[in-house]
Image 1 (spheres, rainbow, N blue to C red):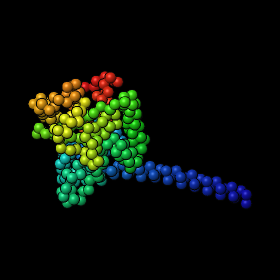
Image 2 (cartoon, rainbow, N blue to C red):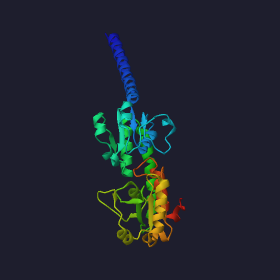
Image 3 (cartoon, rainbow, N blue to C red):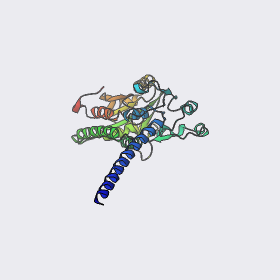
Length: 301
């Protein structure tokens, strides 16, 4: 009887071991199949950067002047981020289409008619970027890569905040977003660049509880007396930057500001800067920190 029990126990143990091993194998296969089946379309360059950082496959990327990562060089282009091609995206049979919340209004009836519901990522701040990367890391089984990316940003945040703490007075900063056609908007603390300024220890002279951008007001700008001006050339920098230069020369109001008098006017260009948060956030924070506190690390052009 004792021998029979021993044999039974051995058999039971083997069954349990095989069962656990089989379960682990099947879960790995299931994960691999899930990732193979995922057909992801990224309609903005910021989403492409996140996908690249997390080592995700893409079947569609935006048509952009930015340099697409090598792994996506031959992936189908789906058009301008503000007006992607519904037909092209539909032909790719995507399982998910990613855009950003700031472009949510651009996706209208055409997508509904094709039964495509884009998923909008919130990239309005550095903290939202980190949250998005973490969530996508979990969703696509890339938690380690997501943690590495977030840790890098956290480390840079700590560095720039240490620099700011050594200065009792925060520099007053005006953030402008240039638009083709000789116009611009003012970026508040709710915008991504405004968030970079806040993290790096600057005081944005225009704040809002809800709005990312507000209309320009010469009197308010003059009254604010900004010590640093950051000019974001979000689209068509070859056109927008000369427009800024022309306006700053022709309008005497700009010459009265401390930032202009002291030559502390800086142009923010892609790929380090954009209207939405992206995986260049660490580099962007270091640059802004050097502009706000140049004696700490030297000027960054």
